[in-house]
Length: 220
Image 1 (spheres, rainbow, N blue to C red):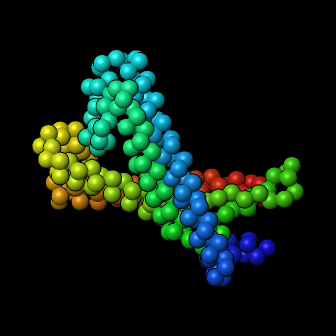
Image 2 (cartoon, rainbow, N blue to C red; image 1 turned 135 degrees about the vertical axis):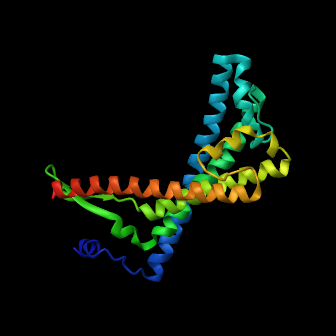
Protein backbone atom coordinates (compact mmCIF):
# COMPACT_ATOMS: atom_id res chain seq x y z
CA UNK A 1 0.00 0.00 0.00
CA UNK A 2 2.85 2.34 0.80
CA UNK A 3 4.30 1.75 -2.64
CA UNK A 4 0.98 2.45 -4.33
CA UNK A 5 0.55 5.71 -2.41
CA UNK A 6 4.02 6.90 -3.38
CA UNK A 7 3.36 6.04 -6.98
CA UNK A 8 0.03 7.80 -6.95
CA UNK A 9 1.55 10.97 -5.58
CA UNK A 10 4.22 10.95 -8.30
CA UNK A 11 6.93 11.95 -5.80
CA UNK A 12 10.15 10.06 -5.36
CA UNK A 13 10.59 8.38 -1.97
CA UNK A 14 13.46 9.57 0.21
CA UNK A 15 16.05 6.85 0.65
CA UNK A 16 17.96 6.15 3.84
CA UNK A 17 21.76 6.00 3.78
CA UNK A 18 21.65 2.20 3.72
CA UNK A 19 19.13 2.13 0.88
CA UNK A 20 21.16 4.70 -1.06
CA UNK A 21 24.29 2.60 -0.65
CA UNK A 22 22.44 -0.49 -1.87
CA UNK A 23 21.16 1.50 -4.84
CA UNK A 24 24.69 2.70 -5.64
CA UNK A 25 26.05 -0.84 -5.47
CA UNK A 26 23.28 -2.06 -7.73
CA UNK A 27 24.02 0.70 -10.24
CA UNK A 28 27.75 -0.09 -10.26
CA UNK A 29 27.16 -3.82 -10.70
CA UNK A 30 24.60 -3.38 -13.47
CA UNK A 31 26.79 -0.79 -15.20
CA UNK A 32 29.61 -3.33 -15.47
CA UNK A 33 27.18 -6.07 -16.48
CA UNK A 34 25.52 -3.94 -19.16
CA UNK A 35 28.91 -2.88 -20.46
CA UNK A 36 30.14 -6.48 -20.67
CA UNK A 37 27.00 -7.68 -22.44
CA UNK A 38 26.90 -4.85 -24.98
CA UNK A 39 30.66 -5.02 -25.51
CA UNK A 40 30.52 -8.73 -26.22
CA UNK A 41 27.54 -8.26 -28.51
CA UNK A 42 29.19 -5.43 -30.46
CA UNK A 43 32.53 -7.22 -30.75
CA UNK A 44 31.03 -10.49 -31.89
CA UNK A 45 28.70 -8.62 -34.23
CA UNK A 46 31.59 -6.95 -36.07
CA UNK A 47 33.60 -10.17 -36.09
CA UNK A 48 30.79 -12.30 -37.51
CA UNK A 49 29.54 -9.70 -39.99
CA UNK A 50 33.07 -9.26 -41.34
CA UNK A 51 33.42 -12.99 -42.00
CA UNK A 52 29.89 -13.15 -43.41
CA UNK A 53 30.63 -10.27 -45.80
CA UNK A 54 33.88 -11.92 -46.87
CA UNK A 55 32.02 -15.16 -47.52
CA UNK A 56 29.21 -13.52 -49.50
CA UNK A 57 30.90 -10.65 -51.33
CA UNK A 58 34.57 -11.63 -51.22
CA UNK A 59 36.99 -8.80 -51.95
CA UNK A 60 34.14 -6.33 -52.47
CA UNK A 61 33.52 -6.34 -48.71
CA UNK A 62 36.48 -4.01 -48.30
CA UNK A 63 34.81 -1.31 -50.39
CA UNK A 64 32.58 -0.39 -47.46
CA UNK A 65 33.80 -2.27 -44.39
CA UNK A 66 37.28 -0.77 -44.62
CA UNK A 67 35.70 2.56 -43.66
CA UNK A 68 35.48 1.20 -40.11
CA UNK A 69 39.27 1.27 -40.04
CA UNK A 70 39.03 5.06 -39.76
CA UNK A 71 37.76 4.77 -36.20
CA UNK A 72 38.88 1.21 -35.37
CA UNK A 73 42.70 1.14 -35.66
CA UNK A 74 43.96 -2.05 -37.26
CA UNK A 75 40.57 -3.12 -38.58
CA UNK A 76 40.12 -4.18 -42.18
CA UNK A 77 37.78 -6.42 -44.11
CA UNK A 78 39.94 -9.50 -43.63
CA UNK A 79 40.22 -12.51 -41.35
CA UNK A 80 42.97 -10.82 -39.37
CA UNK A 81 41.21 -7.46 -39.30
CA UNK A 82 38.08 -9.08 -37.90
CA UNK A 83 39.96 -9.76 -34.65
CA UNK A 84 40.69 -6.05 -34.29
CA UNK A 85 36.98 -5.48 -34.90
CA UNK A 86 36.20 -7.90 -32.09
CA UNK A 87 38.58 -6.07 -29.76
CA UNK A 88 37.45 -2.53 -30.55
CA UNK A 89 33.81 -3.57 -30.71
CA UNK A 90 34.09 -4.94 -27.19
CA UNK A 91 35.83 -1.78 -25.96
CA UNK A 92 33.50 0.76 -27.58
CA UNK A 93 30.38 -1.35 -27.08
CA UNK A 94 31.27 -1.90 -23.44
CA UNK A 95 31.91 1.77 -22.78
CA UNK A 96 28.70 2.74 -24.58
CA UNK A 97 26.56 0.19 -22.74
CA UNK A 98 28.00 1.09 -19.36
CA UNK A 99 27.60 4.81 -20.06
CA UNK A 100 23.97 4.45 -21.10
CA UNK A 101 23.01 2.44 -18.02
CA UNK A 102 24.97 4.63 -15.60
CA UNK A 103 23.53 7.86 -16.97
CA UNK A 104 20.00 6.47 -17.02
CA UNK A 105 20.22 5.07 -13.49
CA UNK A 106 21.79 8.22 -12.07
CA UNK A 107 19.25 10.47 -13.77
CA UNK A 108 16.22 8.53 -12.61
CA UNK A 109 17.77 7.84 -9.17
CA UNK A 110 15.31 7.07 -6.35
CA UNK A 111 12.40 7.72 -8.72
CA UNK A 112 12.91 4.12 -9.82
CA UNK A 113 10.31 3.10 -7.26
CA UNK A 114 7.71 5.47 -8.70
CA UNK A 115 8.49 4.22 -12.19
CA UNK A 116 6.86 0.89 -11.38
CA UNK A 117 3.22 0.39 -12.33
CA UNK A 118 1.36 -2.40 -10.58
CA UNK A 119 -0.99 -4.57 -12.59
CA UNK A 120 -2.88 -7.75 -11.97
CA UNK A 121 -3.86 -10.85 -13.88
CA UNK A 122 -7.00 -12.93 -13.49
CA UNK A 123 -4.81 -15.98 -13.14
CA UNK A 124 -2.55 -14.33 -10.57
CA UNK A 125 -3.94 -13.06 -7.26
CA UNK A 126 -0.78 -11.05 -6.62
CA UNK A 127 -0.11 -7.88 -8.60
CA UNK A 128 2.93 -7.92 -10.87
CA UNK A 129 5.19 -4.91 -11.49
CA UNK A 130 5.83 -3.31 -14.87
CA UNK A 131 8.73 -0.92 -15.18
CA UNK A 132 8.00 2.42 -16.81
CA UNK A 133 10.56 4.28 -18.92
CA UNK A 134 11.73 7.74 -17.91
CA UNK A 135 11.85 9.72 -21.14
CA UNK A 136 14.07 12.38 -19.57
CA UNK A 137 16.55 9.85 -18.20
CA UNK A 138 16.62 7.81 -21.40
CA UNK A 139 16.94 10.91 -23.56
CA UNK A 140 19.76 12.28 -21.42
CA UNK A 141 21.68 8.99 -21.48
CA UNK A 142 21.26 8.22 -25.18
CA UNK A 143 21.58 11.86 -26.21
CA UNK A 144 24.85 12.35 -24.35
CA UNK A 145 26.24 9.10 -25.74
CA UNK A 146 25.34 9.94 -29.35
CA UNK A 147 26.66 13.48 -29.01
CA UNK A 148 29.94 12.34 -27.46
CA UNK A 149 30.44 9.67 -30.10
CA UNK A 150 29.81 12.05 -32.99
CA UNK A 151 32.17 14.67 -31.59
CA UNK A 152 34.81 12.05 -30.74
CA UNK A 153 34.74 10.70 -34.31
CA UNK A 154 34.94 14.25 -35.69
CA UNK A 155 37.95 15.02 -33.47
CA UNK A 156 39.60 11.76 -34.48
CA UNK A 157 39.28 12.62 -38.16
CA UNK A 158 40.72 16.10 -37.52
CA UNK A 159 43.65 14.81 -35.45
CA UNK A 160 44.44 12.17 -38.08
CA UNK A 161 44.54 14.89 -40.70
CA UNK A 162 41.97 13.10 -42.85
CA UNK A 163 39.06 15.51 -42.37
CA UNK A 164 39.21 16.61 -46.02
CA UNK A 165 39.23 12.95 -47.09
CA UNK A 166 36.00 12.07 -45.27
CA UNK A 167 33.15 12.63 -47.73
CA UNK A 168 30.96 10.15 -45.87
CA UNK A 169 31.19 12.19 -42.66
CA UNK A 170 30.52 15.39 -44.59
CA UNK A 171 27.24 13.89 -45.80
CA UNK A 172 25.87 14.43 -42.29
CA UNK A 173 25.28 18.06 -43.25
CA UNK A 174 22.18 16.80 -45.06
CA UNK A 175 20.71 15.85 -41.67
CA UNK A 176 22.46 18.33 -39.39
CA UNK A 177 22.61 21.78 -41.08
CA UNK A 178 25.91 23.47 -40.36
CA UNK A 179 27.81 20.29 -39.50
CA UNK A 180 31.33 19.94 -40.86
CA UNK A 181 34.43 17.95 -39.97
CA UNK A 182 35.79 20.81 -37.86
CA UNK A 183 35.91 21.59 -34.14
CA UNK A 184 32.96 23.97 -34.31
CA UNK A 185 31.05 21.85 -36.81
CA UNK A 186 31.45 18.82 -34.54
CA UNK A 187 29.95 20.72 -31.60
CA UNK A 188 27.01 21.81 -33.74
CA UNK A 189 26.46 18.26 -34.95
CA UNK A 190 26.63 16.97 -31.38
CA UNK A 191 23.98 19.49 -30.30
CA UNK A 192 21.71 18.43 -33.17
CA UNK A 193 22.00 14.71 -32.49
CA UNK A 194 21.44 15.22 -28.75
CA UNK A 195 18.25 17.19 -29.40
CA UNK A 196 16.90 14.66 -31.91
CA UNK A 197 17.73 11.71 -29.66
CA UNK A 198 16.18 13.40 -26.62
CA UNK A 199 12.92 14.17 -28.42
CA UNK A 200 12.78 10.65 -29.87
CA UNK A 201 13.29 9.19 -26.39
CA UNK A 202 10.46 11.32 -24.98
CA UNK A 203 8.12 10.10 -27.71
CA UNK A 204 9.19 6.48 -27.25
CA UNK A 205 8.75 6.66 -23.47
CA UNK A 206 5.37 8.38 -23.83
CA UNK A 207 4.02 5.66 -26.12
CA UNK A 208 5.43 2.85 -23.99
CA UNK A 209 4.21 4.32 -20.69
CA UNK A 210 0.78 4.92 -22.21
CA UNK A 211 0.52 1.24 -23.11
CA UNK A 212 1.71 0.30 -19.61
CA UNK A 213 -0.96 2.50 -18.04
CA UNK A 214 -3.70 0.99 -20.19
CA UNK A 215 -2.55 -2.50 -19.34
CA UNK A 216 -2.43 -1.69 -15.62
CA UNK A 217 -5.94 -0.19 -15.71
CA UNK A 218 -7.29 -3.13 -17.67
CA UNK A 219 -5.72 -5.55 -15.25
CA UNK A 220 -6.96 -3.66 -12.23
